[in-house]
Length: 202
Image 1: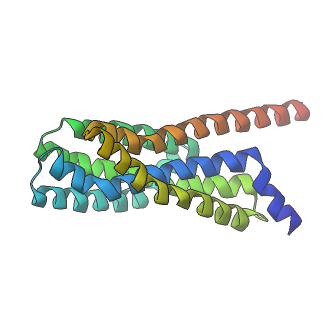
Image 2: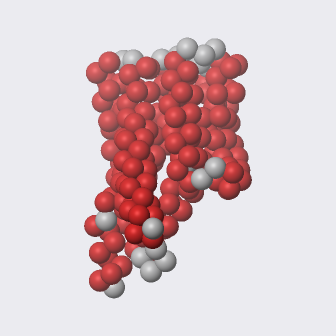
C-alpha cells in the first residue's frame, strides 16, 4: 500500500497528470462552448452548429477506435504530441473557415480531441508499474477532472471580457499548451532515465 501511494510523488506521474489535466481542459472547453461560439460570434445557423457538434462527437468515436493502430506505428508520446498540435491547429482555423469547411474541421477536431486520451492513460500506467497503476490512474482522474470544472468559467470569463471568438479559442487551447509543456518535460525525464540505465548496463 505504501509503495502504491509513494508512486504519486514521482515527477513523471505529476507531469503525466498535468498532461491529462490539459487534455481534458481542451476537450471539455470545446464541448461546452463551441456551439454558442459558432452561433453568436461566427454567425453560423443553429442547425449548422448542431451538425458541427454531431460531427465533433463522431470524430471522437473515430479517434478512440483508430488510436491503437496509431500507437502501434508510432508510440504513446508521439501520438499525444501530434494530437495536441493538431487540436490547436484545427481549433484555431475555426476562427476563419466558412460553414461548409468548418464541418469537415469538426470531425478532425473531434478525432484529435480524444485520440490523446487512451495513450495518456497507457503512459501513466507504464510509468507507475503494474502494482501502482490503479492508484495512479485514480489520482490522475481526480486531478484532471478539475480541468472540466475550471475551463467553462475560464472561457466564459474571457468571452465576457473580450467578446472575441479567437480569444475564447485561445482560452480553450491553454489546456493544450499546458499539456505540451508537461509532455516535453516528461519526454526529457524518460530519455534521461533511459540514458542512465543504459550507462549502468555498459
